[in-house]
Length: 253
Ligand SMILES: Nc1ncnc2c1ncn2[C@@H]1O[C@H](COP(=O)(O)OP(=O)(O)OP(=O)(O)O)[C@@H](O)[C@H]1O
Image (cartoon, rainbow, N blue to C red; front, side, top):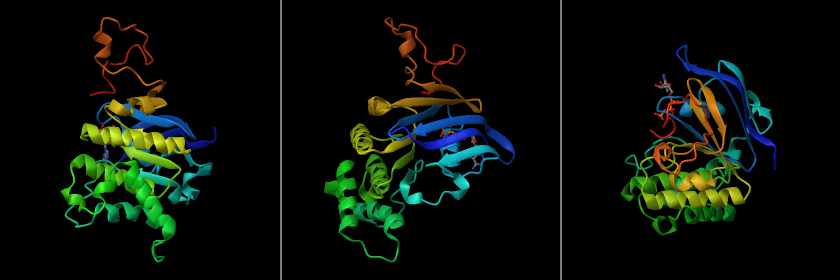
């Protein structure tokens, strides 16, 4: 259960020659739920996109499931939910169709869906609490439900690793709870999760470790830090898991 799923060693990533991540090292092992926290623009999305090879690293290395990224081909092992992708987008697809599209990488585009495909889609819909909306056009769902649809699409592919960029940003409370439960089930079944978040909310108890991105590096790797504001509470015990010179509220703006 301790095999590394993601390893980043001294990763350097930038855009147009401007470095965003200067020296980042991160290991995520099987069964962990790791939250990437940090201020706006600190490079959280850049980090997870570099892990998936969506932006190139200019120095250092990325390893996925014990394989160097450039030689990694087993993308069906990974489910990715990007930031704020509109699932509706004017396309009259139903919730079930969008979720079923998550099976394509696994079954191949030319083979018709079989019983296992349908079962995986059903299970994913149940996991995010959208089974009763399966036949509805995605465009008729709330933003939070659309986001849940995308998470179900990733789950339907039965990945071993889920990578999610702000899955609960701007999402209603019911959807956040539904997502937290889906994540709990996914991990109970042996899954591993890397997610970017601003507010952890109902996700907090599901997170096993937090990394905080700050000034191109990782300034904290360990327990989930206290939310900003907690410092002001009278019973705050002043045990800070992060560095003493960090601005308060770094991970929760
Ligand atoms: N495709 C791109 N081209 C050029 N610059 C980019 C690109 N994507 C991100 N950046 C810049 O890189 C920096 C880090 O962006 P990134 O999206 O990784 O931050 P983030 O921590 O995820 O931010 P947020 O919390 O606002 O989503 C920002 O200054 C951003 O403007």
